[in-house]
Length: 355
Image (cartoon, rainbow, N blue to C red; front, side, top):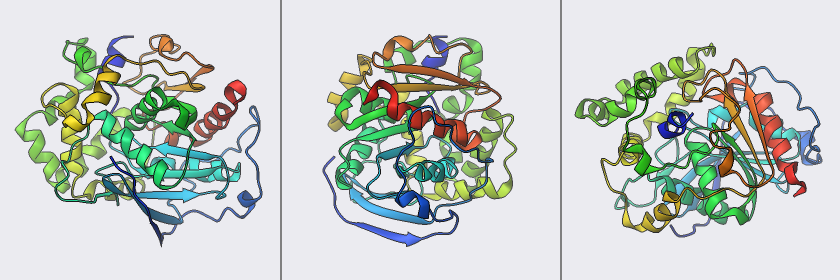
């Protein structure tokens, strides 16, 4: 989930790829010859839940990981990388990806470390989850796939990851769509109390800090039940069915899932220290660096972690071409709940600033 302070303030390269066939997405025959639509062109409306899966799931060695990812769209189209959050997976983009592919984009949707088919290459690699570690995973993915520059789009952990890459490696980011605004974690600020309503919303963060929470996360059935409950709280208008949740819940069975999730939330609130290999990046992020790339920020109006308003609480962090949009009647899992509006933001961000 997102940074509580945002609310309160209202590594080497790898090679080789393999693909396995999955069921779900219809083909994108028309996308092979399409070109990305110009800014302002309406994206066709799709009913959320129209698609249930991705046609293929690929794998590539990247940094310390073998990363599982979905890919669709023309091989030589402008690249969009869509990044999921917690407790979600690549299915958050199951309707967004084909929309973008039909607009002519090459769409990459990776499982983050500890999720789905993504695996560590070595059992000796520490199962850490600092914010910079996850961002470096995506840089390694881009390098392994020989992608120099991409539009990055995300929510929750995905927004944070995209924000970090845009801040530290702006040459790799053509444009940015960041749900909930600027989410780079300020660990020093995290040590201070927030408003009671904010602390209440973060109940599971404190739960994960306890031995009881650790035991729950380490039991597959318990953590799946917990994740489903979180879905109902943070997306009050989303009437997802059992099959929709179960498709994503498969990603929670990753053998490193509990370790990664627990580490991430405990690290954010200062209960554990990070791996020294990431210290220099975390020092840079502690300064809350600005983001200069063209950006569209999205706020979901029913997301309990999004303060009401126009994004002004984080506006100063974005110094390049910029737009903000509030999405009415939508909760935390914005791309899956409102795929057309999310896709429109990606297409518009691509052309924002004339890059």
